[in-house]
Amino acid sequence: MGWHFLLIYFSTMPEAAEPDAHVLLLRQLTLNVALAITFFGLSLIGRKTDVLKPLLSPLAISGVAATGVIATIGIIYTQFFGVSVATAVFVAIAGASEALLLFAWLHFYSETETNYATKYISVSLVIGALAAFFIRHLTVEIAFICFVTLPALSAAMLAISIRQTPVRSADRGGRGLSDHKGAMRPLAACTANLAVFSAAFGFLQGSILPNGNPVLAAFTPNAAIGAAIAGTITMLAYSKLTGRQAPELLRRISIAVFIVGIMGAMYPWPATKEIAGISIMAGFMIVDITSLVYVVMVIRAYDIASAFAIGFNRAVEYATFGVSIAAGALLASAAGTDPLYPLYVSSLVTIIALIYAMTCMERSPLDWIAFLFPEKTLAEEGAEATPAQETPASRMPPDAKSGQLTLGYFRMKCQAVCEQSNLSPRESEVLVLMAKGRNAEYIQNALMVSNYTARTHIANIYRKCGVHSLQELIDKVEQTEIENA
Image (cartoon, rainbow, N blue to C red):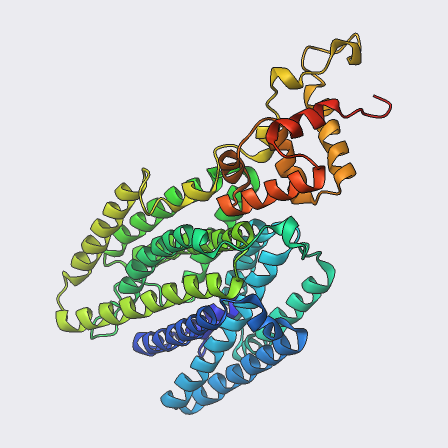
């Protein structure tokens, strides 16, 4: 993430000077086009997981990082001599390298045994944004070294993480079967949500007046502070809230922060515009982070090819971003030096954002958060008890309160059945719900999987447990004796 921000904001000029807004506009367009094309290519050829498997090897990742380092050196070198065409070429190469590194990281998150995406994607954004901010304000020579080494550092950290982190089982029965068709609706809705924010944000970034004065002060290194704030907010939300509460809260926060920033952008005072740019950046990055986390969860829930899901989501974002930047620049050029132009732009984007906010606050095609996340977490679901599963009084100690040992005793029986039948961890989770009489639709919503995957788990459990119906499975659990009970 730090490398991405520096590719946009880095300059060989003294730290007190800022690059020309039109130079940064061209760099933004070039970088987004390269990212969009690379991710689009990944989505096309990555429908089957094994096609891109060689790309995820340590050797391939090292090659991508080396390409990024060389491209970064080329950007610095050509900037010294003011060769715009060569700089654009190296920015495009760096953008392609960044896309491949980002894909490798997201694929790693989708394949880990534990879902690390909610925590570490937010952390990486905070670290990357702050790194870009401080590197930009270092002396030029030290900043060169830091800028060049960032892609290599990212690749090294990924290689270490792959070696030290357990991955999900390759057993298809434990992971479920791929359900590409079922994954398209949540994936498309998530991507549409991201595209709306990308269009609004890009339009503001491209609104540069002929005198070089941007409508939005997002073409400065200080905008990275907004990304760091966004990472901190999402990290706290995911660590404190469960189920769909975190992404629902983040969606509302992002809309509020984004609109507040747009309203502040219409004021001509430099300090106000600076704060507005940080606010708009924070609102957009909250949406971007939740989108990344969501795509990883879709991959894990539906067991689809990560290259297709990640490539589709990112390609739409960067393509929308690039087109809206160009549209904003063309409209600003046509407006001339009209002093009311910032007011027009901010008002228009605010209206669009408000319409979108009102549309998505209730269930709708773009209400992408509620589709996958159940109201209750699995732990909360397991805490419920039914009369058929209550612990007999003879098995409860005299000082125990009514229902105190219900969950523990029921879980012990389920665990015994799972061990006897050699069920996978995922199948064990499904069995707990089935033993409580839950059907496939309920399991689909509770475990955030597709209906096809839920039925696959149920069929595997029936086969391994030697039963043919839900009632037979419930009877098997109830009749299971617990040793030393």
